[in-house]
Length: 325
Image 1 (tube, rainbow, N blue to C red):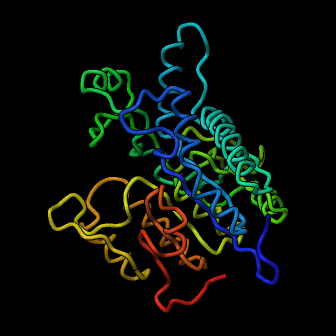
Image 2 (cartoon, one colour):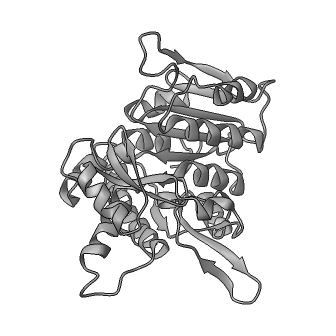
């Protein structure tokens, strides 16, 4: 099922937060992740029924952290894998999980759309200072004793609201290597799962060509760049909160329903967004609109269609409200 006759198909990039795959406080085993994924896909089915061309980008923070831990536990018996290869592995199996679950859901509702996963390489600047400054938390929260043990092995850690977590470098994405193939799939009506976990960070070596890096990329920023590469009009970040708040977590917190790019930048320059993961999401949304996208939305996963249609969440537009693409 594609767009109604006479209407140009709209393209949307949907960034799914970790809550779409693994519920907070759960065991996080594969059966639980499959069950939670299957129960979280209604917004994507609704968008597919409306004829949207859809790219899905998912997080992998808990999963890549688990893989790194498996690496360390098996190090005495098996050679460890670099982070970029582990990201490719999570792109594959998480993509398989979403692909299978979403296709089954589409079939149940009579929506005839194919779903595929593209293991995606994302170009970064090899001279990006962030490569040498590990600040992005990944993996499960741990107690201080476990964190100090990692620290003693040379692994950087930091205390976060969800416990102590390991840190890893996270350079900014520049472009998606496979963007032309993703665009072709979208034009055929296929729903594409791409840049999972932010994609595999790579750089272009003048002699060797594409080469990998030992880092991870923020999935919201990768989704924003992918949106520009495939000429998406809309960017939607689905997470576990209702939208962007002023003074989040304080008695006077306030949900912001509409923001211009200028207003969003003022929020980012202040401390009103507080600490945590919302500031990077707003930065990605602003970058998408500034690069020519029409509109960006941030909202709760279970309100996906309401978020994209402006009835829920936070909407970010250009100052004058004009469309970009």
